[in-house]
Image (cartoon, rainbow, N blue to C red; front, side):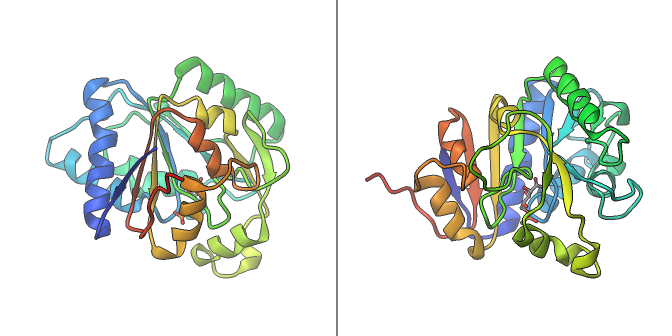
Length: 242
Ligand code: F6R
């Protein structure tokens, strides 16, 4: 993993956006893996800014989002489809039919997971997968557990994850209890991974991600096995080489 530390988040967002856009400049029909939550908002704003300045086109880009809540109407402002529309897709020239977010309202969630994987594996591998990290070390919604899943699957969200995401809802009761997430195999299948970690309160989990033993109890530690991971952070962390 390559670690880049930043003094301020604006600079981090700019570099993160430049990395994503350099993939698109090299391959106009690139497949980008997208994340939601607080971490990517600034970098999406930077991508929109570059598009509006005429510096980049996303016309042929294809995207696959990591995850989606189960049982939240797609029109709900906190569905991840709504998030992507509001923060990115509505402001750039991407063709919406090339944007993929799992359908958390599918009548048959199992079938939806298989459909998502088929599309992902047909169009992939993902050129660059953007990730944030949960306080408990989850990536996507792959929560700490004794085993992890390879493919897209339905998960029960941990209470600390629901607590962390409560800030986007009126109350904890409104935070969905389940989600659909890409599996660890699909995430690690990406050609490159861009992990964005903001806020000193994530320093401890980032330290474990970089330096801790590889364990399914901290899913992000599996990133240590991937050959091309770039970590951008404003946390005060370091590699420990022994
Ligand atoms: C979101 C996702 C999650 C978040 C993580 C961090 O699509 O997959 O893993 O990246 O929960 O969320 P924030 O950035 O809100 O701290």
